[in-house]
Image 1: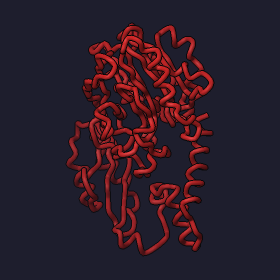
Image 2: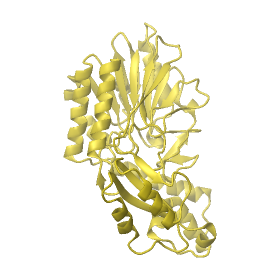
Image 3: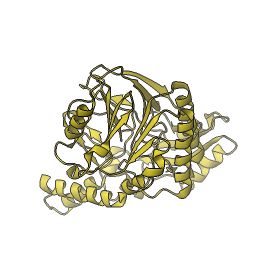
Image 4: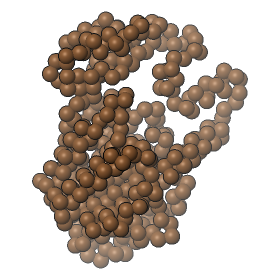
Amino acid sequence: MRILHTSDWHLGHVLYNYDRTAEQQSMLNQIIEIIKNEQPDAMVLSGDVYHTSQPSAAVQTMFTEAIVAMHKACPTMTIVVTAGNHDSGSKHEIFQTPWRALNVYALGNIDKENPERHIIEVPGKGIIVAVPYAYERLIPEGFFQQLLDLASDRNSDGLPIVMMAHTTVSGCDFKGHDNASERTVGGIDSMPHEAFGTGYDYLALGHIHHAQFIHGTEHRMRYSGTPLAVSFDEAYNHSVTMIEISKHGEAPNVKEINVTNPRPLVTLPTTGTATWDEAKQLLKDFPDDMAAYIRLNVQVEDSLPTGAMDEARNIASGKQCIVCHVNFTRPEQMRNKSRMLTVQELQDIPPLDLVKRYASDNNEIFDQEMEDMFNEVVAIIQEEERK
């Protein structure tokens, strides 16, 4: 079975109020072309189709038109789409019946009463076990293994078994994700790779934006990553993954196919920070004919000069690049002198760290039990927003 693995399209994402429809359409067109060339038996889209749980009609149209074009590019291909934590699970379920005419399966919620619904057969080629995102406490204990056992019972011909999931796996490289830690990335607590059970030949993961294998899984567990950068900190290649598995039990053959962005996200300087004058010179030297979004990383003693953003945009006028953000930091010794925070610093601090800081300032105890309760409340709110 040949499978195109992709995830985290984040359609509808807006970068500092700049519309990215043209870039997102370019990404989709490149994936359509890859499908034409590769002719996979299946495509798996492992969550975060949209950037918000309430995408606009135009964004939903862009998605549906892309799926129709992908079907036309390879009419025999089975397409399986699962919801991620950014998606509305219920919206994914609405058009299941008409999608079937195009051999498309969309799963938004875990079905504990009918787990067979998560098992999708690719006739004569393999079996896909599709698991959408759900808050961990809503996933029945042993659910992954239960599904793999159901798939195994159907697999009398020894066909490859591919499972999909959208979550954080312990030990992953979460570079580029805001407010991430070894324990939690994007509001999803990490799970050990052993928690997904045994019996799959390949686990097609979504949620982490950096394409990678999970260490210790013999190249059977992989994040395809996002094909289009969502953050300036995602300074790495973006791609989709082609998988080929000859039969159940054999190791997958993996090929990464790059997806290019017509307007990349560029940080100046590329590492570290610069003074305001140095940053302006880097912007002046940036190629006039290169389309890009620009972020300037600037270190200041107090604050940026009045009108700094206007000055930066004036420097870039006549160039193809767009200056959309000036990220300024203070030296460590300056940050430690005062508890006062700028709006930007407030936005950059994870909510849990803000709560801990508040507790410390007021001589309150914030122990592990309170931290767990806080994280649970945040997760419940996020789950309600998805619905």
